[in-house]
Length: 133
Image (tube, rainbow, N blue to C red):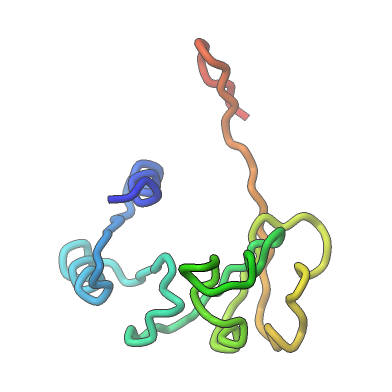
């Protein structure tokens, strides 16, 4: 597994974290073996073959469209207009301004929007014990 999945599995002790190139089979496995009733897919927005109850679209407040290019030339997985398929928008690394540059009312219509920010939960000094926040 990649480093992101390993970190999530380490932090989310009682949450199954599965990695598979076949998202459908991984989901079936999670339901059958772990009894889950909700699945959250990383980069699942573009997997249109999967039935879903909600599409959550994340925008980085500081770089909502990366370099504006589609993958592999850029960070976008889909064209901007596909944002209209979202049911909910989360603006990550929110810095206190209104919407990020390039995100306007037409792009996200009347979608519910939540803003999130990063918060350190521990400080570490080298050769010393952690300092809790």
